[in-house]
Length: 524
Image 1 (spheres, one colour):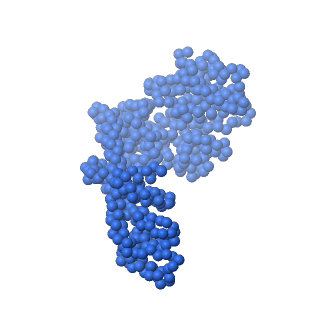
Image 2 (tube, helix red, strand yellow):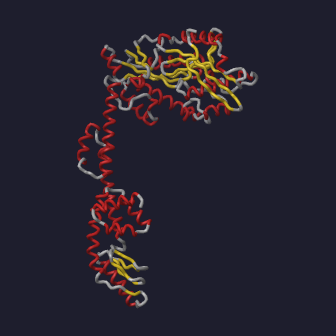
Image 3 (tube, rainbow, N blue to C red):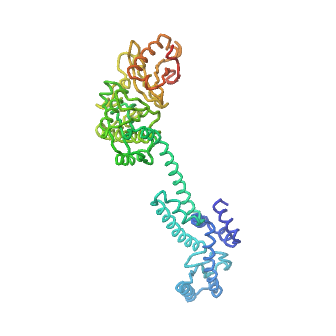
């Protein structure tokens, strides 16, 4: 006996209804499953109430059965058959729910048996056996019950969140499973609402500190698009009213595209002021991505009207800004203003990349937003570069003919950059040159700037790739790193610095990647 059937039997036993258990056991499988599917839609104890009502109808009709004779089908005359049909029709017309059926063999219908090969008038209800009457009753009850459930959902869905607990009290006493499931769902919704209110209180901490210090207009600022191979870098600055709480505002990367779109309109509607700075791919190639990011941030701040009195930024200190500012690590998740700015920047740039997708089909810009997805890289290799590609980011994606060593090195660096992105690194620079030193990849992860040397080897006959980074090579990398740190004003921003080695080894037509953090130190 399957579990659904066993559940029904257990409830029927509780109500001492062995008779209907016997009936259920005699049902053919399709009919049995139809009944069980209807029964399982509602509370089992409701089944017995329906069954009791059905049983009362059946008991009334059983009195009729006693007055109807059995007929031997072989001896039936035409007149007898007509008489038999007439009896059935009259009972049906009288509303007694009857039907004439033939017993194909020895059969039992609610305790009444007919000899094999006889006709019998079975009174079960408008041509239906007991299980069919139950199904009809259950379907009708389920329909009413589903309507009630939908009505409760509708009322609670439109109920103001603060009034939700009081509204739910109306149905707290209803023990039916479906009603309780709806209430449980809305209780969880209300609990999430309370948790969100607590989170919003927490992410106003930095703003409240500024307001308390006398800075009435506090701008949050964030950027998006430092890592893509194509498209601009975009920064957004947002000033929100004091004590403004927008449910859902968070690090834009934690939100779905749909949620970001919804919040974008709410943020712009509530904002005291906002600004958006855009720096093109050509400018990125000219001054590097970090400086382009700062430029976009300064542009966004310059658009604010009224101007900000204090700036909260995500993880950076913006050069050449006279307004007091503070960089907050993971600020888009810790500050309401920065979180709002991250959403505005993300939605604005995503929409821009969708327009580029129409202008430059085949690269998947609407989906990858310019980042180095497999589809995007394959399109570059197949179609070439577009006017919005960052040349400084993609120069190694299409190996140049001639110098095979450079070609292999470029492929190794491309593979390393791809693996590093998967590991959570943001690629800031590729092939940075300074003071007779070169750095293959400069990346950022949380508060650490990472200088990565990539070594490619076809085999290990001359040692592992890491062994090629000798002390002299290390000093050249350190010298270039110091130049980069000074150029980007990174020391005063509180970053940590690390030197890593990425090894790419090709052996027996297979490529292996190994990444070593903190391979050597700045003091060496």
